[in-house]
Image (tube, rainbow, N blue to C red; front, side, top):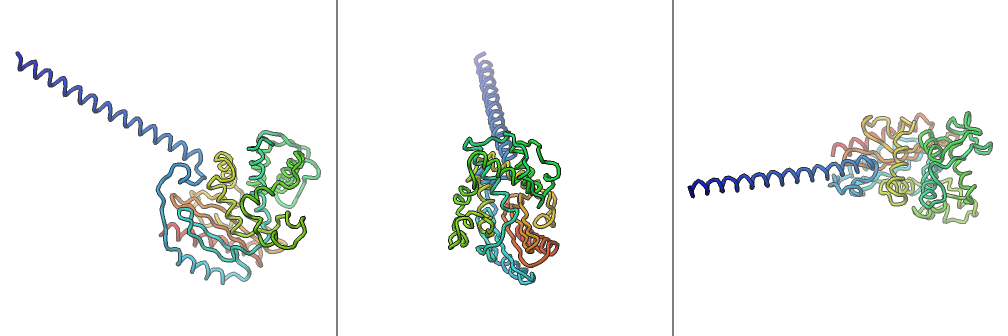
Length: 327
């Protein structure tokens, strides 16, 4: 009888231990599942920001970029004009530059810092994304985009104006945002962002130009442009929500030539193209989101027509993509 009781007690004990063990394992799995869900949700919400900032994942390091540098320098010699280039491998900040600190007109690339300045004003409580603005006669600009055809006297939110300006590179939307700033007493909204990103160190701004020339911001360098995209990628100038907001619009532009042309369609690219057709100046700058191997590429060209320049940028982009993917 004692032996039977002992065996029964032992079986109950073993059963309790196994129940507790599997319950614990189940709880651990549930905890891990919850954590993984949280990480997945965070990655999904901020999928265009630096992953090491968002969830601290491991990095894919590429150490040797000398072969890519040699290839890009050979490519440069094939272009009958001036090449401005800056590449940054975002996992470890290895970079390649060609005339990266020489100035050239940034053209439509200026629309990115305008959008950043607008979001900064929103974060400071001066504006709001759902604030309405009516397009005025002075805002109409037919230089690029189509809003000039239908926008006069139409009402848009600031959020919509930013979207139109970035995805369609629309000049009227850009002018409207400048007017929004003037309405709150800010004549030059770019002063703060240029200062924050170190662009006051540009040679033209440091020179003997007049004050008006100093704040025109017509010229830029590909190195300075990279600071702008790095500020969004690392969310150092705007909040994570607003950095993501702008990068999402920049990844949904109408431009398919240049950097994206020979990159697989499933690779997300947040970029901005700049065109100064009358002076044969073209540029494209942005972030290419190769899985675990994000990189930044900015290319400016001077001296050839649009088709030739777009194709040259596309081939440079393909060379960089192929190297990053295959090494």
